[in-house]
Length: 458
Image 1 (cartoon, one colour):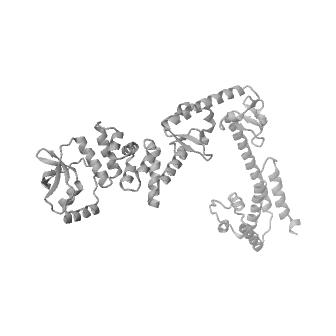
Image 2 (image 1 turned 90 degrees about the horizontal axis):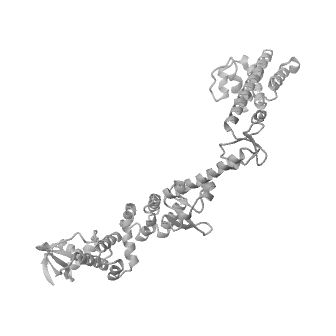
Image 3 (image 1 turned 30 degrees about the horizontal axis):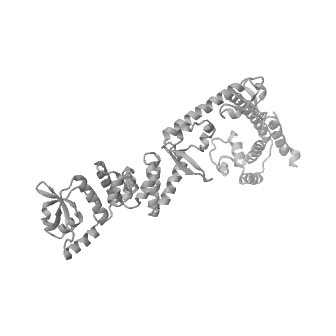
């Protein structure tokens, strides 16, 4: 052992410890001031000076309190021996950060002088401990940051490593961050539950797939999926379902999407063959068709007599009519709807002509008429009111949703006319089906004639 000046000792960048606790360093400074440096530093010759191998904490503490010389042991050491001594010294004296340990272990093993098992024996550790420490270096940067800040442990990182090279990892990391922000803590068990939740349901995010239980959107092609290549695949992870049975989840979206595409192609091929076979038969199984490829025919849709005879018009397995040419179906339906609407317009026209004819014969009683009109409006007959007035030549451009505002557009002399028009509109609202041609044009004027006739007024 000898004494060397601090200025003659160089600090190497090889030390795995990058962070020094200020409180622990202050305690060491106080001890050195009282008792001196009890254990010498280890150095090795380096050109005209010496390189520090072990004892950087003692070196820093001595420098902080102005010590000029320190006791040292000078050794001729190889680079590999220096790395090993530095690692052992840090492990024995004060715990390194997991990533610092991993980096130091990696440096030693990269020199090819020792195996993981041999290095573990020298450090008093197990080979799996060494292997897992080195695996920490494969973690995403976000997890490394959580590990350095001590928000998570190396066990969290090891649990997430199987997913680190897949897109699902971003989702897992985001959920972990949310948990840490909300609860300031996340146990390993809680983190494993986060991983399982995201992996087992992430087919919604287009990231993973349960290859033993396809989601609903792919359910029809599941029997056609060839999963023989999934056995022993490195992209597969196992999780138990609600029946405690192992189910395989594929993390490789490119792989499982190819599996789905091939299964869908087989499914569509079989369906096409089945559809072609049914083309010449009178009965079809609509389950073999996409819902956009056929239309169920109901008598209320249009006059179905135009569908006979037609090779596209078939019966399904339940005996109902279906059309295998949706374009043709929509054409007939549109034509029927057009005729239907035209019939309604003609009926309304005849109704209002009759109503206006009988209104001209009505008398006037302003107070009674205003009371009746107010009652109709307050009873919520807004729609009939708007219908009645919007079709009246005396009132135009009505846009208000408040029926009472219509008073600004009519005069007391018009009250009775408005009442009768509202009643007619309400009657049409209740009996709107024009299939029985002439019903409205006969029913409404007859009612109006009854109420405005001299006999009724008596």
